[in-house]
Image 1 (cartoon, helix red, strand yellow):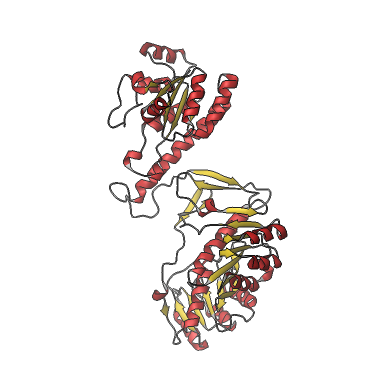
Image 2 (cartoon, rainbow, N blue to C red):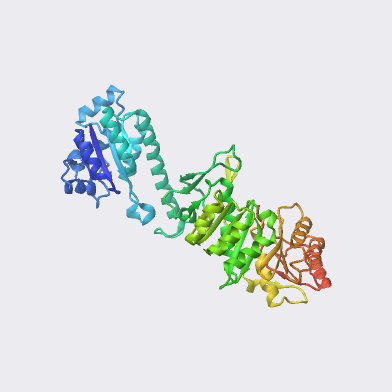
Length: 512
């Protein structure tokens, strides 16, 4: 039996090679792998001895030779293949151990592996006869089978072949992304933020308790070799397994909490989310005050929701959380040890997470039949300095602050969305309705007069004045909206008639 070893990641290599040698396997190695085996005193042949051709072009050409690929690719069920190898003096290769240059960690032309993927694909194609290993984690299982059965089963060979093709697919996807990104020599191929093709290589990061419903399976995946997601830094300290909706809602809550706290440096923010929509958002002098205000916005909807607290949770705040109706998930930047102990004792099933700040969102994909809709993530492009006051009355500084908060929350709420805010608290949140008047009515009922003198935000323009009137009837003194309606002049006139200030951002924020 002959094994070809050519690995960048040398984790476990020495022990694996010793194990193979002890079984009488002939070892062939290339480049730095050969040097590593020599340093460990492990007998082997170098690839150049097998091919009769020394490495060339600074190592770009080592294994690209019929003596290597003929030995890998021969179909052993075909006598003609075996005869051709014999005619050329080529020995069969039964095991290929190869992992590729870590392209994603340091993208460059020289990190584009050629010989490695060629060997991996050849061995994977011929998995009925050849074993291919791309992950050091598989060394132990292969050695165990060889020791026990003196062979590797077809089932294992097929599993390893699948892993090999996944490895090269992810590698090629990373190279395509690099070429698209503009840092490769020659600059950006196109100014289009949506490239001509998308190549997603994903690995399962963890199974979930279930999907949207208990009869649906669910899992979280992450990009292979891509930048880490904030979810990779999440630590679960207690509670049941997470479900699909736990992650979906926590994503919405955590991102909104960080967007809101950025509005008021020196303040804390708290967000409560239910079914991906905020039901309580507040700024406060500290995290405890922010949480108390956010929870009081809508205590009924907070039951079974997600609580996002971007800061350190002390025991006093933990006492307030467990005294309120149960949250399914609490996610915080940090949680004191005695607060964790309290959650464990009083809320055994509540999922308790600590997390780093959210990362930048990549392109967003949504299934569409057997294809996908793809878009850029929704960002706030128009700063407050670009907003236009279109009414006779100008907002006061307090109203400006309420307008900014309402606008941020509104953009992260399902359309049609209306948000009413006052004094750093989003008291009224109306969402997901087929018309803006109904959303305004829901927001007004939930605010229950608490937003009087504050601000209203609408995620899209008011097509008629009825939606605006519903907001003003709730007592707000200022309104922010994108503008762009054919009836903008009528809407502005209505705002002037009612004596409120109106600001237009020129930027719509639908969310579906």
